[in-house]
Length: 166
Image (cartoon, rainbow, N blue to C red; front, top):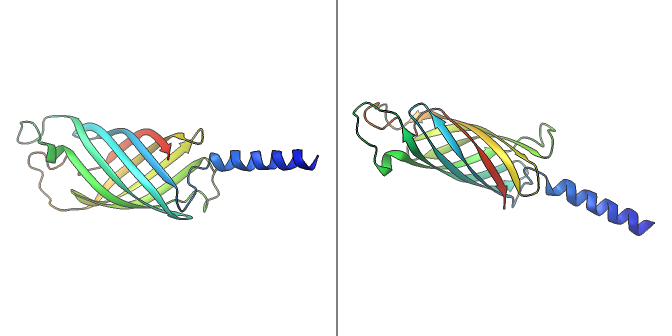
C-alpha cells in the first residue's frame, strides 16, 4: 500500500511539474509565430531562458514577409525587414497565483530598431507544446523618421503562435 501511494504521489507531482508554463532557473522556451503590424505581416521567433523563479532573458528575431506600400515605394531590403532584440521578462504567474500551465510575462527589449516593451502569455497543453500571444510596442525609437521602410518593425505588433518547452 505504501509503495502504491508513493508511486501515485510521484506520478502526480511529475505530471503537475511537467505542465508548468514557467519553471524558473534553467527553464528554456522557444516561440515561433505570425506577427501582425500596421504596414505588413511577418514571422517572429524567440528563445527565453530562466534566470530565477520569476525572471528570464531572451532573444527575439522578426522578419516582415508581406507589406503594404509605404512612403517612398519600392521593395524593402533585408535590413528593413529584419529586427533582432535582447529582452528581459518578469514571469508573473506564480506571483499572481495563476494556473501553472499559464505564463504571463511583461518585459523590456533592446533591439536594432528601438527600445521597447512587450506583454505576453503562454499556455501549455502538454509538457512540450503550448500556444503564445504577445503584444510589443516601442518606447523610444532611434529615429523619428517615417520615410521609406523605417516604420517596419518599429511600431505596435501583435504576435500569435506556438511555444515549445526545450
